[in-house]
Length: 281
Image 1 (tube, rainbow, N blue to C red):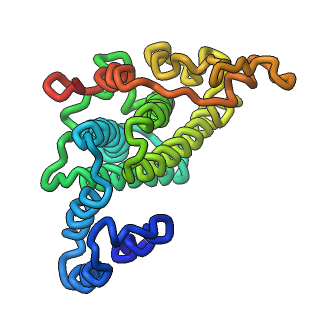
Image 2 (image 1 turned 180 degrees about the vertical axis):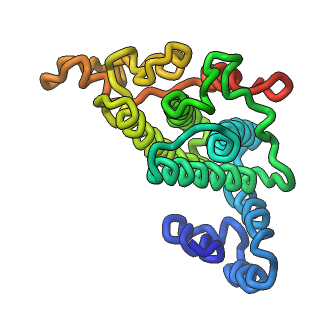
Image 3 (image 1 turned 90 degrees about the horizontal axis):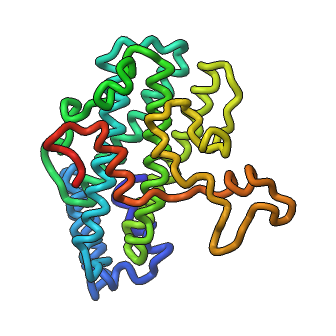
C-alpha cells in the first residue's frame, strides 16, 4: 500500500480520523501535498506523531512498554534468521526451504522497522547479532550447523511470538496500535505453521500445522523449550469445560484454542537467548 493512502484507508473504518487530527479536513489534505515533496523515509515518523495525537491514551508509557517488548522479540527473530542465512554452516536441503527462511527473515525485518517507526526510533538498531546467544548457553550447540535443530528452535521462537502478542493484546485495547499488533500476530502464526511443516518434512514425521495436545504441546522434542508450550493443555474456556462438549475429545478441546503467555513468561524464555546487559527486565 502506498503510504500516502494510509489516512484514506483509516477513514474507511474511522470516519472521524480527520477531526481527531485537525478540526479542518483541508488542513489534513494539505499533508498529502507536503508528503509528496518530502523524503519517503521521513513519512513514518511524521505519521507516528500524528497517530499519537489522534489516538493518544491516558497511559501512553504502558503502550510504549508493550511496543518495546514486541520490538525486542522481533529483533531476536530477525537476527536469528539473518544469522542462519549469512553466518552459519547450515545446509538447506532445497531451494524452497532457503527461500522460505529468507521470506520469513524479510517479514521480521519489516516488523522491526514498523515498530521502530511507531515508537519514533531512528538510527541504529537496538539489538544486533552479537547481543544474542542462540545456543542458549549451549543447550542448542548445533543450532547453526544442524538444519533440524535450527528449525525446531525457529518453531519455538514463532510459537512464543504468537502467544506473546496474544498476551499483550488486552493492554493495547482501545489503542489504534492494537490493529497493527494483531496483524503481526497473524503473520507470526503463519510462520509457525509453515515451519512446523518444514520440521515434519525434515524429520519425515506427521506433525499437525498447529500446537498439538500430545507431548505437552511441544512438537519440537526439545525439553529445553517446554516453557514455550506451558498451559496449552488447557480445556477450560470462559469458565466452560470444553472437553466432552458436543462430543469433543480432550485432544480436540485443547487444540481448538490457543493460550497466551504472560509478559513475565515470555521474558524468561527470551532471556535464555539474550546476553547479559541486554536482557529484558
